Image (cartoon, rainbow, N blue to C red; front, side, top):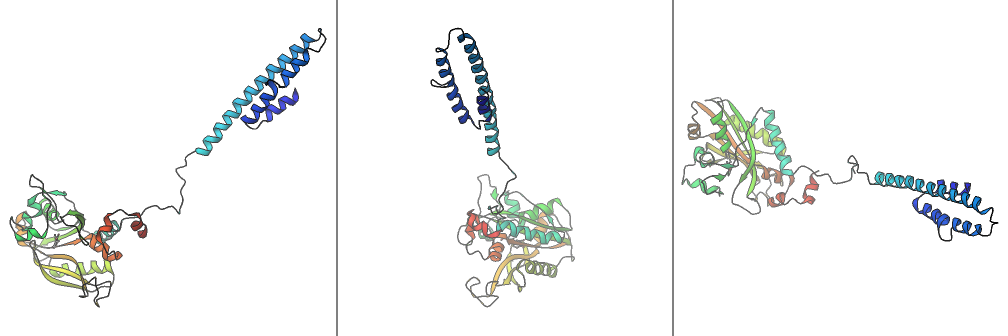
Amino acid sequence: MEQWIEKIEHSRDLEELEQIRIELFGKKGYFAQEFQRLKELPDEEKPGVAKELNSAKNRLYELIQRRKDLLLAQEIQRKMAQERLDPSLYDPKEFKGALHPVTYTLDRIIEYFLALNYAIESGPLVEEDFYNFEALNLPKHHPARDMQDTFYFRDGKLLRTHTSPVQIRTMEKQTPPIRMISPGPVFRRDYDLTHTPMFHQVEGLMVDEKGEVDFSNLKYILEDFLKYMFGDVAVRFRPSFFPFTEPSAEVDISCIFCEGRGCRVCSQTGWLEVLGCGMVDPNVFKAVGYENVSGFAFGLGVERFAMLNYRIPDLRILFEGDLRLLEQFR
Ligand code: DAH
């Protein structure tokens, strides 16, 4: 009896316990044999032994039952511990993502102008003709509208083709002095090696009393900015045309691939065009009701900056979401 109790108490799992149960209560088990032997005893001893056997049987049966409950509970505990989800577990070798090169470039641009106390302004992506064109000195049927292949809605609204409309919205709401940049997505019907239908621009605007802001301020800031972005490059201003600025310029940096010697990327010129700028056209000030002010504006494409910075040959791969690209920018 004692040895059976011992066996039950020391069983390690349900399987072992079931084995003991069979040894005890099975057809050829311990009790079956004991009851068999009962027949051979003298009649007067039978009732006493039978009673003992029955009480031992009940006791052991109950012990097995209790042991079973315990083992079952332990089993569940063990499984729960094994399968527990630990959200703090992490593998430092696991790929954790990275900032998109365009985001990183945009952050750097913003950082520069924030340091100069420029405010960050934004405007709607679905824009009105007035803000995207008209107020920027681009009246209807002006040929320069064709420079920007526009997505139109049926009601006459459009997807903004540049961030310049934010200039207008900001000047409408505020009074000079103004110092702002406006980063954000813009949209054009274009798709090839160097154009995607959506890309990002940063617009810049500085306006103050007439005579307070002139071309030399523009030149100084943009030169300093481009050296901040691209390192020790040469910067040149080339006369150009934009409807919203007069005079206007396009700005080049010396080619960062060949250091100005001439290569395929710069079409052997030694220069790369990186932004447009100029003094705000008087017609633009007229559209927002400003008088006796002067100011400069500039606009740049963030993807172009990212491509130059990271030597990315095809603009489109920036938008394919391929993790193999992003993994390189950690
Ligand atoms: N809005 C022009 C474009 O998308 C970029 C630009 C050029 C903005 C000159 C300016 C500027 O503010 O002065 O092509």
